[in-house]
Amino acid sequence: MTFCLSRIMAGIIAIAVLTIGACTSTELPAETVSSQLHKFRVVPLAKGLEHPWSIAFLPNKSILISERAGRLRLYQNGRLDSKPVGNLPKIVDSGQGGLFDVTLHPDFRKNQLLYLAYAARGQGGVHTRVTRYRYDAKVHALADARQIFDASPKASGGRHFGGRMVFDRQGYLYITLGDRGDMDRAQDTAEHSGSVIRLHDDGRVPSDNPLRAIARAKPEIYSFGHRNPQGMALHPKTGAIWTHEHGARGGDEINIIRPGRNYGWPVITHGIDYDGSKIGIGKSAPGMEQPLYYWLPSIAPAGMAFYTGNKFPKWGNSLFVGALRGETLVRLELKGDQAVKEERLLQNAVGRIRDVRTGPDGFLYLATDDSDGRLLRLEPIR
Image 1 (tube, rainbow, N blue to C red):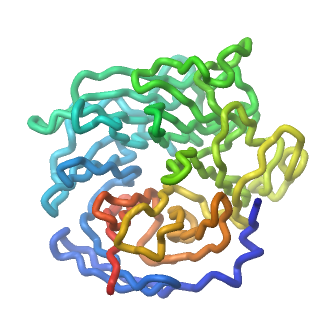
Image 2: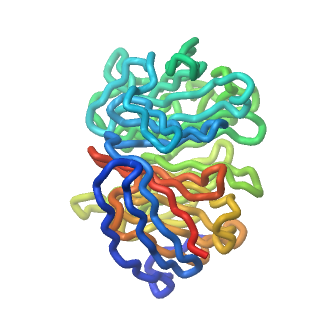
């Protein structure tokens, strides 16, 4: 069932603006916030991150943070290491391009493998690439690089790279790709743009990928018709892959990704173009998926996480979405595969929220997208 934001505005509670001091990581003050279900404090852990994009939790309680400018940073023992992780690939930092997601292999404890998604140059321009590495904590560097995916064709311009990655319960790796600012590419399965990719952990194409037997179609494609998906998460109960993607002027979407499905962009959309003109043929069409949820006007969603911890028990059926526009953390209350209520937290309080994750300690972690970006932690107040 699809829900429009305008239908549930009455359920939204405005949250007071916070002001958080700019000081060193050990001196950053916490601020208290009240929500519909929990009172919590925002605890800043680190600042000075250049447009942080992604958070990954290591088994030793350290945190890896990717910076869009092309650095991978380590937060450990209450401090942000001043020295970036070494031996990163050549990354194109231009427009929306740069270093995107950092994702650990499901058996990271045993093999120390991690994956980087980033903008890389090739013949004809730039697109998203994924490389696998072994993380060597002793020398604070990456080793044993193996390129496992390179989106094609390359394109000019600096928009819509996608760049999120998630492993499912069977060990398949999913990668989101944007339409690179050329909307019609999302309907052309002869190229990767505007799709969700599914691979084995070493880059091999699964034998049951839905387009593998179709002539000219890229065999890595699992779903297509996406504009710019920059949020992806594994449902903790069903194991399904959920994504969200940016609309144009409105029409940001949350979708459940199913094999071989066409999610409509740009043939159908619930938004309009930036100049106010119509996009495509309307809001629906045969053979094209409807979103689970969408926003009017746009919130510019970025980062997404199901809450799976035990520190906020009343958030147990919640999906959290970061928002760049409005500088908001959106909480969607779920009933099965339906979003039944929306709550907006931290509006205009901590900055543009690029990533949101449930930590292994049960707290909720945020990364703010700024030239002086921060790593934040939400902690309950009993």
